[in-house]
Image (cartoon, rainbow, N blue to C red; front, side, top):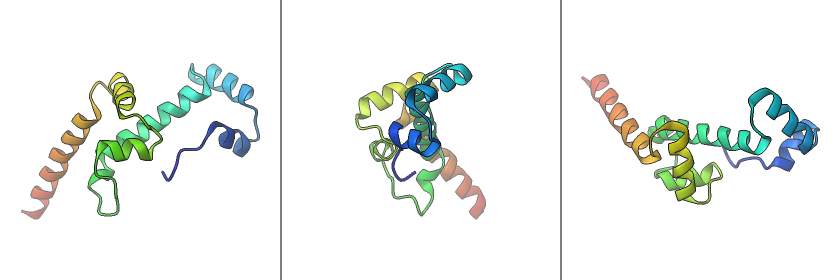
Length: 110
């Protein structure tokens, strides 16, 4: 994800008004468009913490860098939202991913 789309960019891409998107998201997902966009960015950040962190092509090395790359400017708010959604801190996810990744690479080399 290079940079999160803004609401106006999403509206323009879908050729829909903000009010229309809000109603559709509320009806189908039980949340407004902004909340849904935030949820998607949180899920993508989690995916990056779990899987992309250890790929050679990934340049993100810290929770802060990953949060920023998914549009979260305040790490404290990101961590709080992340914890509410996933039941663990981003740093805990990252640490767990390191253990899993290093354990897998050790088994593969044996």
